[in-house]
Length: 204
Image 1 (cartoon, rainbow, N blue to C red):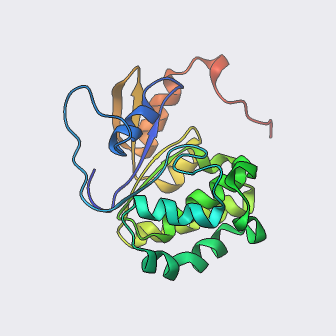
Image 2: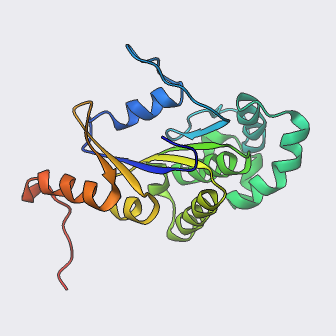
């Protein structure tokens, strides 16, 4: 995956999408082969991932920032922007164990995008946000693309993949089934799904 690319990873549940993302994110060690990552990487790999439940949202910003290699002065300089983007208000000083999935997603995404990563890994988590915040996240992703950042995201939302990614990888049973232009890859994936399993659409 080249610098500045935006790549979607699609496939059925259990196909290995999240495992691949966690290998790239250095959460899992591959049983064979190697992964090389060049640049600062920020990850959103599940609700509560990287958060300490007993710490407040504000304390978890420092906690996550330290994992990303940022200094205390750097985090203080970014703190107001992170809190403002998250829209958590006074909840920022409540323990994360009291947060809903949507609140955790808000905090996690805000930390991920405001700590100046070169690479952003996202695993499906934007799906729990309300429509306004989801639109805000995709707007920031567009800004990341314009800034030449690298984005890799796992999604079941094929419309989001079409909107954001120029390249899409279709995984099936732990193997790459297709890798290419997003529209063509999604069409091939949909053609492989039995009619009864396809997402239903409202009649026009």
